[in-house]
Image 1 (cartoon, rainbow, N blue to C red):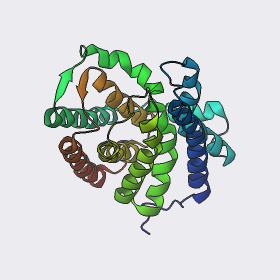
Image 2 (cartoon, rainbow, N blue to C red; image 1 turned 90 degrees about the vertical axis):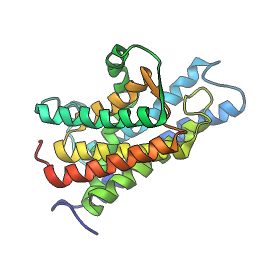
Image 3 (cartoon, one colour; image 1 turned 90 degrees about the horizontal axis):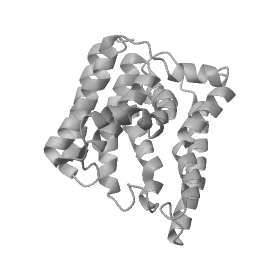
Image 4 (cartoon, rainbow, N blue to C red; image 1 turned 180 degrees about the vertical axis):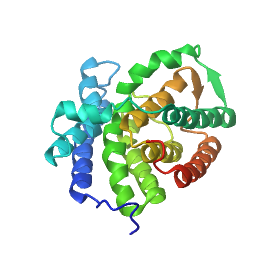
Length: 260
């Protein structure tokens, strides 16, 4: 297999992270599904948010456990320091914004949109979206993508990471009261693959977990104001994903890690 650098693929780190992530997610979200089938839902019983949230943080929890276990971080503070590496040049931040704009603009213009709230809500929602998605990057772009990149190379690693990321979300489509419930998983998967390439580009070009989290936060916050369909619009999802893949391949080929 092609390797992108002299680093060796850490199979134990990679597999341990996925095993712990999916074990926590399947246990917690599986419980939510079973309870939902019996009429016990998030809307009626607030305590179901406990296993739901634990499942959502499964990849983040697994990240700390396996990085600490494999001596990649010294402790919790060191782990946080690696994730929240705020100090990057303006070009790195502009890359994040540009890719987020490409995604949101294409999805809106091709698939249609409606204004659900004033534009400033996007900025107000950003801190909330750190919890509502951004911290996933402590796993997917801290461990999963970089390790696959060492073994498979950028294009395949970004694609495989996207598939894993989409499959991890699958139980949410069966939990009553969750916004993904009953929606189109295929349309979602196509969108996620495009986002995976954009996130892989940010990780590759900046070596930053924080900037990946910021991109994730922006993409999750935009629909709070400008609502577009990431589940059912195959045309919008497909075109957006193709554009993001092409842009990502061009950027990685031309800038590599020059933005670090």
